[in-house]
Amino acid sequence: MSRNDGFHIVVFTDTFFETNGVGSYYKTLLKWSRRSEAIRVTVICPAREDLGMTAAPEGVISVRPRLQIRNPVYRMLTLGYYPQSTVCDIVAEIGDPKVIHIATSAAVGVAGAVAARRLRLPAVGCYHTDLQRYGRLYGRSLMGRPGEWLGGLVTGWCDRLAYGRCEAFCVPSPSAAQTVRTFYRGVTEVIPNPIDVEWFKPAPTRTGAFRDKYGRPGVLLAAVIGRMAREKNLDLVCKLLGDDDRIRLVFVGDGPYAETLKKRWGVQVTGFLHGGELLEAFQQSDLFVQLSTTETFGLSLVEALAAGLPAVVLRSRGFAESIPPNHGVTVIEEHELPRLGNHCVELVADESQHHENARLARELALPFGVDAVLPRFVEFHRAYLR
Image (cartoon, rainbow, N blue to C red; front, top):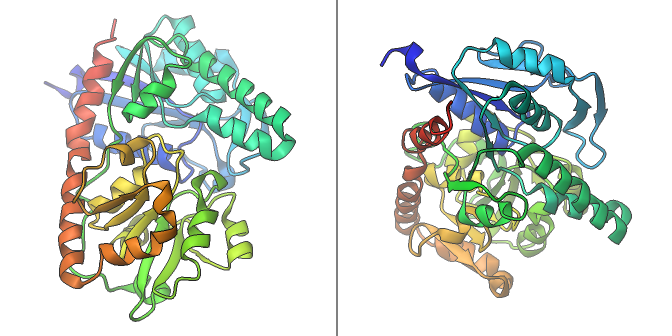
């Protein structure tokens, strides 16, 4: 098959340049597509000069809204209106055959859905964020119970507007498939999020600059890695581990809740790390901790396992719901939370046990490698070409 025999997937996403799971997903897809003969990918996303992104990379078209405002409940993201004529012109100029892929249900995702309908192109949705749950959570924090109702109403309307006319839907986990059924009744297939297992891999030792900066001799270095937002149960992590003398807690990432964490709990928050610095955080920590119950998949957890980082997680939706026993991960129930510190210490009690759990963690993550997952993603979309 020649490069020109592949078909085109046009991705509409409201977040790409930002550091989060959705951005990571489509950066990984775009990178993989450049060496694939089966697919070409173009990503359409908001322009973000405020993040220093003045020129879009190859395969990315950044569009500027006619009207733009800062998101009042998540200030690292923006809201805007994107003229449909402009969006349709962009899609029409992209070579055929093509499928529209709707990654998010905010303004850009809705614009993609309208473009697919007007240009009579097939559309496939992908579910990354439980937007309605977040809408209720943040709405309640702003306005109490009326805000919870209003937040759920608005985000539910966005989901139906963006995804309602999709011909099919891919979701990262069985629990996400159940959530999607509340607003979508069509074909749904579970395709997990892909990771680059050749990049996220263990290092020969856990020594290095990250450990020198954040670790302490004789104390376990526990990392919470990902977006710092209130729905991630980060206060609970601090409450349970913040005063445990056996454990040094470090939060790797940034987000709207980062300043609150530092002021309320006095914990270490690194800010966003990228590339080799992020990889070192995975490789040089002793264990990964996740108590979030709002994940549709849990990308940071799988990246941690691929890097050989054992984990203690609260049983919840997403990938954590299907982890088998004895694979380098301790999955605890809510009633076990008071013993979180003990679970962390027991998981990596000695060097030989840590090494074995690291090996098992890596083994558990390998099926999520890009070369295992993305061909399934491609064939799922190919089925809806016309």
